[in-house]
Structures are given as C-alpha cells and as structure tokens.
Length: 225
Length: 376
View 1 (cartoon, rainbow over the protein chains, first blue to last red):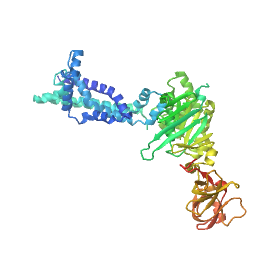
View 2 (spheres, chains in turn green, brown):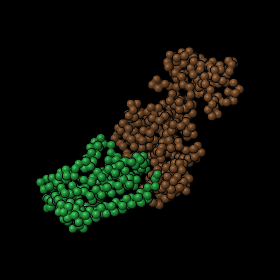
View 3 (cartoon, rainbow over the protein chains, first blue to last red):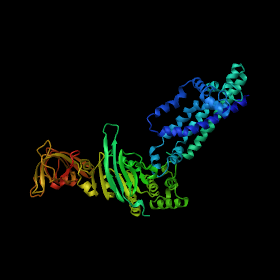
C-alpha cells in the first residue's frame, strides 16, 4: 500500500517536472525576451497558483476536465475514458499547480543573460534557435535546475489539488500525502508515521541529489566570473 | 574573392530618439563608408550606437536604407529588413561580449557553423596567427588579459569574413602600446580584405591615429566630415570643438567685415573686447562662436610691438594652476581666457597672480565655429 502510493507519487513528480520543463523553457525564454506590452498579464496568470488556495485551483480544474465540460466530452469522444479521478487528470492539475515554480526561476535565469551576448550571437550569423541552444540555455542552466528541483519537490508534497481532482483511489490517484491523511483519519498512526518518514527521506534525498548535481553541472558549464 | 565584400557601406537613417529623460532628438544621417577606416566621432549620446545597431539590424530605424555594395540590408520604402544573422556585418561591441562559457577557440568557431569542419580549423589557425592569440585558444575569457580578449573578439568577428566591420569604442580600455599593435594588425587585415570599417570613438587621439576619414556626429546629425585634420583642426561646430580641444569658446557678434584684409572684427558678447578673425560669409551683426586653443595664445609681460598678430589684448592673471608639465593660466581681459604655457615661461616671464600681461592671438588662431541651430 505504502509502496504503491510511493511509486505513484514518484511517477507523478517526475512526469510533471519533465512536462513543466518542456513548457518552461520556451515560455521562460519568451517572458525573458518579449517586449510585448501585455506581457504582465501572462506573468500574472503564471504566478496565480502561488496565491490561489489549492482547493480553488483543484475545483476549477475538476470542473474543466469533468464529463460535462467541453474538454471532458472531447476527451471522452477521443479516448472513451474520463480525466476526472484518473492519473492523467492528476498530471494536468499538478502541471498547472507547479507552473510558477518551474517558470519563474527559468525566466529569471534567462533574463539575467547579458543581452549583448545575444546580439553578438546574432551578428555572428546564429539563428534565434542556435542562440538559445548555445548561449541562453547553458548560461541559464542553474535557473533551469532550480526550476526542475522546485517543481519536482512541489509536486511530491502536494495535497489539496490532488484531493480535489484525483480523489483517493489506491494505485490510480492515491499519492503519499493523501495516504497519510487517509491513515490519520482512520486513526492508523503507525502506518501514517512510517509513510510520513519515508516521504521525508525520499524528498530530502532527491533534493540532495539534485542540488549536488547542479553544483557539479554549474561548475563544468560555468567558470565565469 | 571580389564579391560584395569589396564595396562601400551606404547608410541613410532616420529615427526618433527617445532617451526617456525628455531630451528627445531625431537621428538623421546619411553617409557612405568606402573600404578602409571611417571614424564616427562624437560625444556620448550623439547617436553613434543607434547608427551601428541600425546597420546590424539590432534596432529598426523609422525609415532609411542600408546597403553594402549591391546587397540591400534594409530599405523601409521597399519593406526590406534582412535579419541580423544574415546581414554578414561584423560588430565588435564595446563590452566585447565574448561568450563566458566558451574557450577562445569555441568563441572564434561560433560564427563558422555553416562551413565544413576542416575549413573551420584552417580559418581559426589563420585568425589566431594574425592576431597573436595562438597561445590562449584553450582559455576562457575570464582567464585572459584585456588585450587578449580584445584580440579574440576581433578574430571572432573577422573570421566570418564580414562584408563590413563595425567597431564600437573597442580599444578605449587598453594602454597605448597594446592599442597601436592591435590597430596595426587590424590595418593589415583591412588592407588584405578591402572591407569598409566604421570605427566609433569619442577619443581625439584615436581619430588622428586611425582616420582615413572622419564623420563628426552631434545630436543625431552629421556636422562635419572629411580627413581628420580638416575636421578637428578647423572644426565647424562647437561640440566638435570641445572634443577637439578648444579650451576657449566665445559667443561673439560680428561688428565689421574687412574683405580687403581678409578679416572681420568680432565683439565678445557682454564685453567690449574685439577679436580679429578670418573673414567668413556670415553677415555683420550675426552671432558667431570663436574657438581658440589655450596653447595657441602667446603671453607677453609688456606691450608687444612689431608683430603681425592682429589681436593684442591686455589682461590680468586671475589664476595659475600647475597641471603635469603645463601651467594653466586664467587671464581676465573682460572675458576669461584659458592659456597654456610651460613652467619655463612662467619662470622667465615671472608670471604671478594679479600680474598685468598681454595676450597675443593670431587671426588664424581664432576659429569660426558654427553655432548649433544657426548653421547655414
């Protein structure tokens, strides 16, 4: 039971952090470089999950992916299944919930890259894509790592959104934090204690690994200044 | 290889400048740069960087046209705007903008992505040899000296064989010896490749050292162009004059012209002081600015006689300031003159505070400057 919840949580966190990186790299670059006047609106929307209670976010996501919504109906037509109370629905909700934690460090790191380096790259004949790959990404790597670590950790420990969207289905949507809540409700403190300790150790270990990795990575990528 | 690379850079730009501090002005320039050095000279804020950014496409002018030889890079009338990455204009920024996470070799190789690897190596070795940086190719910018960084940045810009080269005050941070060696290397390269080089500076010495041709820029407009001697020795505009080292600039009105003597009499405004200046076509009663170099003024401690100089002005020494090997005198003659003399002259003429002296100024040492706005 505990291992099942643990495995599900880990899968969710890894999948969500990877999806978030796919979103955060282009969106972060756009936020860092765009001079569009309406940019602040996008920035506000991206930051919204930080201030919004998870239950509010979870509720809206649930309504949006539920069988009565256009998205839910379209998904049912295409796949025959439903998004609400499934692992996939959980992934969607978690991506939205952890969005600012992935995007903000990435955007901050990208915008701190000296604009003159980008100009130099362009005058040397590099396309915007090559400039991104060879200049912006390597120099912004510490920020990308921070975004990755934060979205992973944030997804590992999330509770409210998962409860709203996923419910509490062992093997499908029951994450570790939900399991702990469940066991405490059932006055099953021994299992709750074991699970909580396991989650603590797991989170701490993954953070230690990631920060250690970032240290070596930034040392080999960056010897400046 | 006689392609577009051997042709002139032609620039015509108009852009409304908004510095955000209320002193908006419009940039309006038109010039062409032949293969060889052309120096773009002006105070900071005159619009030099905007011109370079517009030529490379990093900024878009309101309208205008930029071309190198037969290649049109920008033409607002025909809606042409070639992206920066395809303009083939080498641009050496003031900050050099070397990529900090790459070695010198990787920096130089960066612009060669489109040519075969074997050719790349040849070009890198060539550039490294001609700019004397073979020894630092495996170092990152942080591990190089200022001069080495400068050379790597130059090699990086030139190895791509650009059609034109723009240099934005690239040598200001270097000592004179390093500077002149780099300039020599650059000259050799330019002679071999025959591309136009636009060199931006606000340093008078650099203008003399480099310029085949100088374009002087002031508040977004070209106020003078020609060989450096012509632009700097007889400057037509007040801000060029300040840059060119005119310590004395006087607002005058013309009281009389003497066509038969080739002179005109000017009165310094707010005084009764008269100066003889070379005759110009500016009509009497008009305002004019006269520029006089502090080193061109002679000093006498009794009324001089039998001189060809037309301007002999009595005055009183109001200040004596030793600066390096020169002594700066401030002389009150009704208007304040700055005069530079040697310490030897101070000693032999016994120049002391409050002494009465006479200033002697040749007519041709009084340079008629165009006043901003009143040019015709």
